[in-house]
Length: 190
Ligand code: NI
Image (tube, rainbow, N blue to C red; front, side, top):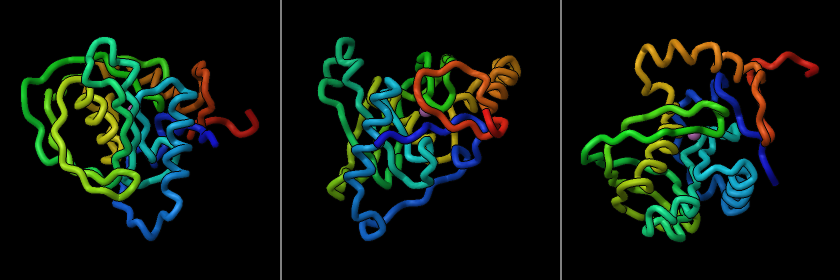
């Protein structure tokens, strides 16, 4: 089942998401499968639960579209539950990021190159791992979502001001997008 993706402006994207317990989500694997299905249909490489309206510490990543450039991303398909970034190190580098909740906007974002993260997978197995490069980049972007942050928060005041109208339009649904979305400020009946 595909979810509609929640657009910029919805308060669920601004909430720090709580951790979840196995007992609360006995069907977590179905939810994870639905999130991957939603992400693939929108041609994304990552999707966080708040982006489908669920405030919980869960995100999914499939970075295999980048594996031509970075061989270590081959088969990089992972589920992150109750993730906690323990350390971010290395030089900051810029990459032109986009977000399924903010269609049609791409901006250079600076992030540190390496991230150490603790998380559970969909079998509730605990992991503590270190990632670099594009893997770290996608993790940091998705992790921001469960912290209630968006990549546009990281832009300069000038870039933010230049984007203001566009972001406002997105929240109203005044954007052309190929996948199903839910717009917080859309007029009823449209
Ligand atoms: Ni995003």
